[in-house]
Length: 325
Image 1 (cartoon, rainbow, N blue to C red):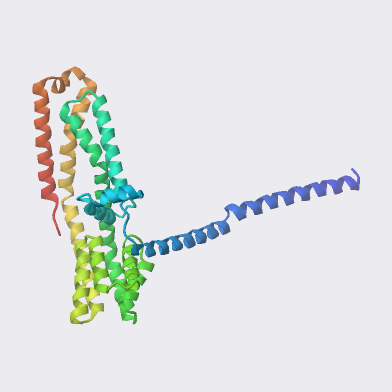
Image 2: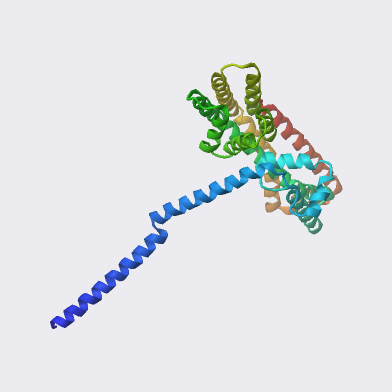
């Protein structure tokens, strides 16, 4: 091989090396850590702009529907404000029209299943009612989870406000710090209170609106204490620290109660699901043995009575183990 061949091989090697380096640099710019950091910053900027738009939107009324015709129709129906308040407390982005549409869809699906499946009339009725009530149960569950999360965040938020006021900040500024430093859902509520005060709403009205949006006993204690302090005077930082300590002690006691009542909850689950599991196993092993319960009129009456007694038993057990702290 002469020198020219070595030069060609060297140039080919350099070309392949540069190509690999270029591919690596392109991949790093698109998928590497630097790109990930840029993407996170862009998402943070987008989220901040979205939150500012959300904060400004509190000056507008909550729409009941995206359609003007449905908006006018829903405004005249009774019970619509309570549904809207429930959706607001749950933290979901649904409006009343969406909630009613989902309930109607669930009712239609339940009715379709009831018309297709060869089931007794009371089970068909239960399917239709369950389909219509499924969105309501989802909203109630979201509301309960949101309230639990808010009650867990509230002591830390009160401590943050107390430290901020000891450092010389005003009460509205402390509310703003909670909205900026804490996480959702409590941060969203405190940020909304701060925005309402900035838009000219009185502090008492803004705090009362907070208590109306969040039906939490601990948060209402905080609102009442702040309103009384603003009228009578006193050391607000010590008051916030005391409320935070009381809430922490209550949550600690509630955790101990839940541990002691865990056996009762497990018994309720076992006793509630055992009949259905046993019936399923009997149906799989010997269908003729159990089909008399839903083919004979006497068997259907026995099943109905058993379901009624089972429901009563589960409710009684739930009442016993549901200890309010």
